[in-house]
Image 1 (cartoon, one colour):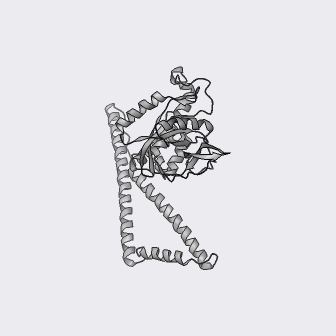
Image 2 (image 1 turned 45 degrees about the vertical axis):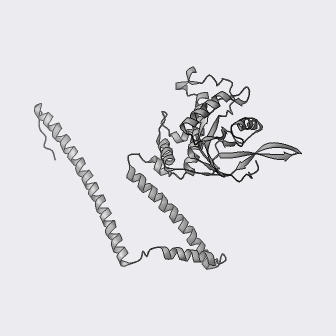
Length: 343
């Protein structure tokens, strides 16, 4: 395990970067192992040979901005890697950098990304090559391996530091802590991708396991992904239901802790008791005649609206049945058939 970083930088990683890396890995994996229906020579890039190793990796650059001691990684783009020389295509990197500078003048190349379980010695050669662009690049590593016991994101950010090992100063990778920085537009995008349906009928989110972990980490309810997109009301209610369940579980934990404190199972904490009392005093009084009357009135109004909606739906269905029966018997009478009394 790599040592922790001592640079003091704060890293903020946006979900778009993780989605790009996951998409890059999934596309290359699909091209190397195409389905039988699309196994055509034209679907595999010329740069990928038939003897490509099974533990293949993808490479790219991460871009963003640095403000003081805060490094924010916004986006990424793919790079061309030459497996024979273990190096990146420098001309392609310069061209992509110029294009991104024109579109996003405030973004700069902060480092690079790859896939794998951990950083190795060959990664340091690529890392040093990027020091011509950024004197202190970052290395974003995504682990595509499936680990059902893992609860954190399979993403690691490395920095390089000079350490003296056996009397020889050399650069090594060190772990850097990071936080997820997301905006509403990125949440909408992740939710949209989660609803996509590939040609095989499965969910797009199941095509790459890291994508599932990203969705879970961003606190997108799984029930929300299973709801049709046209049902906006149901999606809103599902979100409220998830929030209430979370609140209920937190209150239950606090209640059990206070009961154990009252029984003497755990020592009494006066600071915690004062905080709990302050929280209870800030809650509105829910046990009063006025509250009960208003609650029952609102509850009955909601039930009445539901009943009216059900009755309207049943009436509409009955009208459709009557119209169909009338149409069927009208055609039969014109052809001279015998009429059978309905109902």
